Length: 354
Image 1 (cartoon, rainbow, N blue to C red):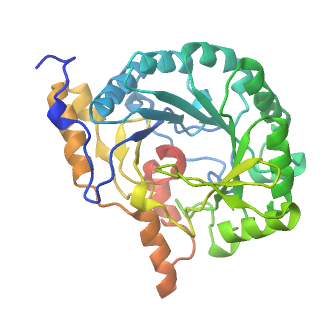
Image 2: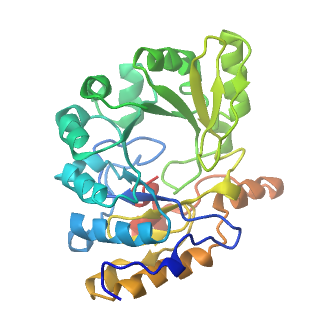
């Protein structure tokens, strides 16, 4: 079989629970220009060796193998993906494969205004910008950086450039920003965006997670219903992580309840790190090395078989397993001890695409 041919017998692979391989989160770098308390609270980390980082062409090649097996949506993540030079070129490479129907980006927005036009012209479909507070002093407290104004510039540039289906992601943290939920919805209306509130997740270990800090979906709905009145859930969630809701005025927002109401049963996502480790679940303790066989010029059939067999054997239900620990009183603190995190950078969320 030639390198460009596709073995159709390998397409549409499903895992042991019948979940299809549909979406790939592609981390293009483990570096970030913020130090958010819920993700990267320490000043410095052990970074992935630069010689191990995949080239843009290597990423596009691996993406094609995933497309051979059913992936049609790719989300570019980090770290902060806009720290990767010439990201627009990667977007163009990915859009050459017509089976990939959507290339999206999740960013903290600091650098977005500078490259929005290039990404749009390259074929980027959707943008999600993280925004956890509308208060500059809280932003500085949360991120360790004074970059709030640049995030707002990035958000403003989304609409000016022409992107549609714009989303804002807010990590809802009890005791920190629950008093801003309504304000964030109003801000999203102004930006013609849809805000998604994400429950604080116990991934990694440096973030000092505790269940007491989780602002649950029920709490979020209760707070918002006091302000807006009746809130109606929308049907048709499918494989999407967010449950969407409609306010009385027609505005729509979403909640990603990964901590209190996991959606493992319909999760079709996997994650590829910037150095080519493939994780079948955000909570997975280990990944499959795709960089080594790729750089050894293994035959495309073999590369596809590694992915096909890996997904076919997938039993991961990481969020549900973490939720089950509550019943025996063992869900407290981070998932992994801080010393182990310092030994292996892959164990932190910023290395595997969050």
